Length: 465
Image (cartoon, rainbow, N blue to C red; front, side, top):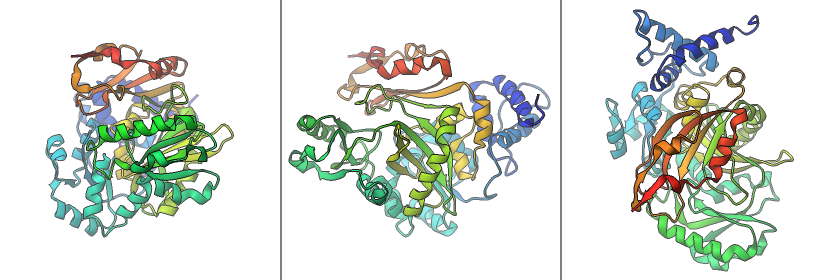
């Protein structure tokens, strides 16, 4: 039965062993498996036997062999910049275990213990001395620091051409000459002639984040109202993020890209070769929906899209000169197979904690995959996860709801909507447009649970003053 698939026997045992651990212990084991042979994995608490610690180490090593191909480089210099608005528990563990330099700032001091915090000048000096270390940032709030302190590197120019949606479109314009886009300033919104677009178009900040300020204009007659909403978004969100993250004075208008949407987490190695560490399917409730309510991962998505996205990311990396950097890119694939990029976000994977879905869906840590040069063994992973879908549910609230009026949230009732909730992460900052991130797991014949949450009114779980 297992004649040509020895890894299957290992996987069966590993699945049994990991089921005997708590959720946090399983996360610890997955993270430890990423660096067998380079250093002892961080300790976890296995079942109480005299051989527990030793067994943990070799099981962690086997997990690494099952989930990944060979490491690309035995020793890669790595560094971290952690910033607001959110540092996930998994990223905290990775930064703590790897022992790499972390930029000393208020966020790092609050979130980390027992790590090497390094001041601005020393951090920049170490970056240049190490010659292209792998630098991971969890938040685009760090981009301004990179621009100011690493100006002698290639990073600021690479960030600008990717992060600025107008420059990003210009970079790839010759690949899709029929695609229409325009740049417009905030003060010129009323002067826009919406009939230049033959059909629906999108208006969004030229430098943006988390779908803030995004408007879909279905008809030219809808433009005046959309322009007013853009101005209102500018007033509401101004100051929430640095200008390098969210610029509400410049907008890009671009034709709607039809098709299924996907978010790709990937990294480029020192030679510019790309490795995909996850592909997240991003369904919507309807054509005008621009929310980030649900992201999901499943084998069918990897099997359908992996090679196609590698081809497009290779071309993007070549044009932008990307080396030793992580990237988060959104694409749409039309019914006829046409692939168009929506936007690219450098220096990080999925925002907030979206990339952590890899640990729940595939069993590995995406941060250490990038930082230690690991390539997921997608054939094996897809075989192991056949029939299952793992999702991240973003509990967002209406843009016009004043979160300072929220007095209580029924997290238990929200979680109970799903048959297999995995992990709930509460967001209690009233400045943010979400109140939780929930990781869930469903069988492929239970996707109705995810379809229903796309259309649900989540204010039912919120009590207002």
